[in-house]
Amino acid sequence: MFHRDHSPCLFLLLFLLSTFCISSISHSQQSTWASKKMRMREKVRTMFYHAYDNYMTYAFPHDELKPLSKTYTDSLSELGNLKLEHLPQDYNGSALTLIESLSSLVIMGNNTEFEKAVLWLSENLKFDVDARINLFECNIRVLGGLVSAHLLASDSSKKLFQGTYNNQLLFLAEDLGKRFLPAFDTPTGLPYAWINLKYGVMENETTETSTSGCGSLILEMGALSKVTGDPRYESAALRALRKLWSMQSSLRLFGTTLDVETGEWIEFSSGIGAGVDSFYEYLLKAHILFGKEDFWRMFNSAYVAVQKYFRHGPWYHEADMRTGKATYWQLTSLQAFWPGLQVLIGDITAANSSHREFFHVWKRFGVLPERYLLDHRMIHPTEKYYPLRPELAESTFYLYQATKDPWYIEVGETIVNSLNLYTKVEGGFASVKDVTTMQLEDHQHSFFLAETCKYLYLLFDDSFVHETNYVFTTEGHPLPVLNAWHEKLPETYIPTNWTFMKRQPAASRISSMSLQVCPAITLKSGQHIESACHIPDARSDYRCLTDEDCGVDSTTCTRRSCSMAGYCGLWIF
Ligand SMILES: *[C@@H]1O[C@H](CO)[C@@H](O)[C@H](O)[C@H]1NC(C)=O
Ligand SMILES: *[C@@H]1O[C@H](CO)[C@@H](O)[C@H](O)[C@H]1NC(C)=O
Ligand SMILES: *[C@@H]1O[C@H](CO)[C@@H](O)[C@H](O)[C@H]1NC(C)=O
Ligand SMILES: *[C@@H]1O[C@H](CO)[C@@H](O)[C@H](O)[C@H]1NC(C)=O
Ligand SMILES: *[C@@H]1O[C@H](CO)[C@@H](O)[C@H](O)[C@H]1NC(C)=O
Image (cartoon, rainbow, N blue to C red; front, side, top):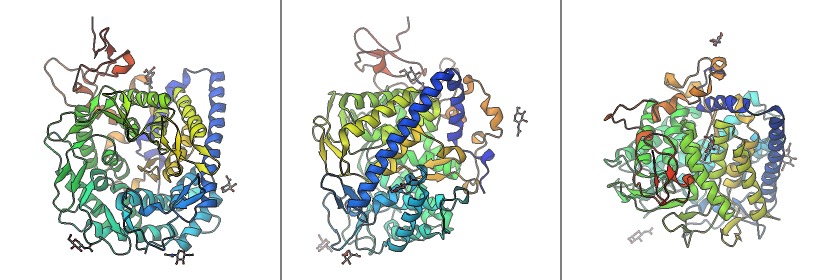
């Protein structure tokens, strides 16, 4: 079914970029790096099992581990639910952390534990519970975890099962997917943010949801339709996405929250962080997974608008979708995924410069604070926490794949050491409540196992992505890129001759996709091409201390420098 030499993913293109860099490093340096990577990989493996074994001992089958008190929380119904209404009395959890760990177990090569987990889930997991859950969270964590694990389990070349795999995970995923469908029964097709797994949409349910809540369902629900042959999941997600798309402003921007009954925006300000992030991510990843040209066009248009209105040098602020005027100047921990996305389109320079800013903030505080106010150069007074988020590790993994620059290995090492130093406790890994004091909070989020540990492991050992191309969902669950799922693959992304590609010199070390985002065109005077690379920054008066503060100029794609008076610009003498 899967033919490697026709596989389309950019991922492998990015591997090829690396051959050049590697050759400039001497043999002895290479073996030093190889042994460092192996040592770091084992360190990450130890972290994962410390988190996993403590979860299994103190929390399973409940949802997440409380590592300080060594107990559990049934957080599936709490996720994103601040008021904790509708918590079922006798709810015993949905083994959320186990589901989230499935693909990580496969990546780390623990087939026996994977099989054991699958068998337990198939016998015990039930979704017919009176629990009000967040559709977005349940989709990316539970449905995504199950569909991804199903695809891995049914890949016979992986031989994950001693016994026979009878699609047990698929039945669970399908049962869950059916329970999602009533959420989409609205006049607009935009889904409710909350749904009761047993009873559907509750009376008086809030009609407010987020852009991510409507725009990042297509990977999981699309994949569910592909594996079940039932088109309803993909159709529902696609209809919601198209409706959302139609709600963009004349500047091609989107807001953050909206009403699913009226289809009107509630919050007009948005950026690339909370409430919006995975919407952009899924436009591109849906294109890679399903090969539809439409997704690419949507992504490209949205990406250009982001670069035009949100970007300031290496940072991204927020802006009002109606006017494009900057609203909040802040760096949030969630935004750190963006460089990883930019790597997938080949925009390595932009990715590198943003990633450096996030890493700089990480080094300054030891971990990433949730929200950092760029204009005041201080942490947001009420968002000082770091809940073991994966985004910086994720971007570091992508950048290392694309460049093989050993510097990213050092970044990964710093991340691993900080996590072990500040967040490891006897009972697992604890979130940081306040990065200025490193005071801990009694919560080990499931995404620590699904994403943080996984991306760190893949940074040091990427053998999992050698045989098959995968798209990682926003929760880090791998979905294989299969020809059979592609309706029509744009020709530019199909490398027809890998041997030949491998020998291409450094000058062509950009993916064909990046040419569309950042066309290598010499601009004649007066000619204006709107691509992400030819958009000037919104403000030219950003204060800086060093050239590093100024990032890359988007008009010429060259580095900007910091003037003696402390302003960024292209100082050409
Ligand atoms: C949860 O566990 C308790 C104790 O084992 C049991 O009585 C109850 O029925 C369980 N609830 C559900 C929904 O299965
Ligand atoms: C798989 O995981 C289990 C549970 O943590 C552990 O006991 C076992 O040693 C692991 N096996 C491998 C091969 O890593
Ligand atoms: C729904 O809201 C109405 C008006 O506020 C109220 O009278 C009714 O009791 C609510 N129903 C439920 C089930 O909460
Ligand atoms: C990333 O940027 C730094 C300068 O900030 C540069 O030294 C390095 O070569 C860049 N790496 C890549 C892969 O572009
Ligand atoms: C790939 O390209 C190289 C160089 O042009 C050529 O020698 C080789 O035969 C090609 N391989 C295939 C499978 O087309």
